[in-house]
Length: 537
Image (cartoon, rainbow, N blue to C red; front, side, top):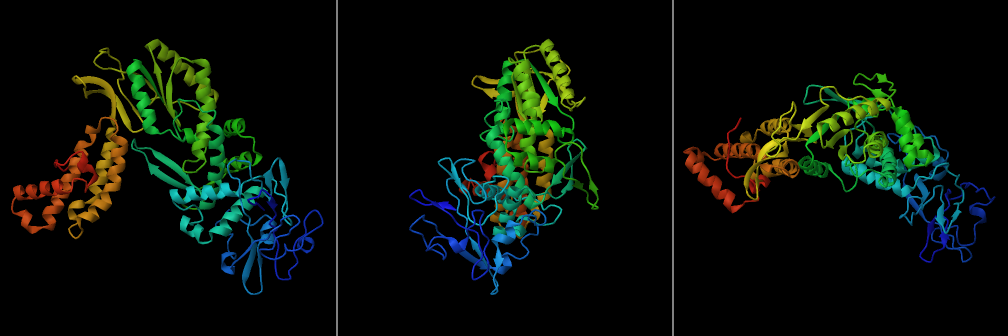
């Protein structure tokens, strides 16, 4: 059904064409009793403005569409909507969606909410859940842009897109009928910088699509209640905003509590997660599928399955918003209620609390540890610490005078201000992150690309360097200069390897280098900061 320009409701009936028996609606009617002029495509009844719009698609788009689209077909409507003709074509009526501004503005099973009323389309069974079709399409756009690795079925985003219309319909149909069941998540182990292992759970493309639908609904509703100190996975907020706020508050307060929750995503209790979801969303289908995703087993590399009893797998589209909702009620609201005068920054499970004195920091840390125990979590004994923000105006001493937060290291360092150099407690790129970036630069082996052009090198490294500079170069960008100089050194070695005339002397090589930099200063993105080479290590 759709709403035309004049505001009348047009019912698009799901039926089969060319002599095949069409389903009858619950009012006792069907295509045979529709008003005159509404049976054929483009026909409009002068009585009630009923219009039928059909499209014909190849049979190959319908056959096998269920593979990789969320499990076996469970709803009876799919066979009802798509009927195969003898000539090998599918006749399917188009379901037009309008008035998409509001989350609940469009009902399912062919209903459009207009002026407080609902009209059902002819011949379609009523769906138990109101899942908007336009929301599924919007979720698909996000999944396609994010891409991602295949799940347990081995199907990539490109495979799902080959039969996109049928796959999208099946996801919507099963979610709106309650017959959607997720597949197991594929286990992926990633080594941590500190030597540990991070376990990711990669869902299938169909599951990522369904999870994105629920995540969009939860984000829309939870944004109204989130605490201003929460920065993770929120529109208009990011990690740089959290680091900027943390830097300013470190200047205002002498003490910091660096909170590290041990194995947060692996140990978060399901019952409290569901309570947090129910506090911001009253849609039954959202709660239903959140529970199913939480209970989805983990499939290892050898094919064995492991049932989980708690935690939400990292790598799923819905896990970030679930973690954010849980921490909102487990920590944010508790802090605002128990210690309203104390400020903090939280990005998912990374928390930094600012205190005025050491005694206050000790009291708050004890209370936070007790609170985490109440919600089924625990603090890391070695990584959770009280830090003294030492600088030129705070010459005291303490066991810990620095901490890490979102890839930045906060400590006392020399910075340049309006009146010259001074000692300040400021953030800069974390040394482990700098080492990881250096390893990647070395792996490029740029000096051996003698058959490539300068444009090939720029296309390879510019996107990566631009990302590093835009994130790690926001605060204290000079910490990145040694890394960028190293890239220049590799480029100079590439220049000497490609052109024999430059191997005569280093002076000739450097003259050629600076001439090229002067002619095209924006050819490589890092030349905006440094142009001189550095030692290659």
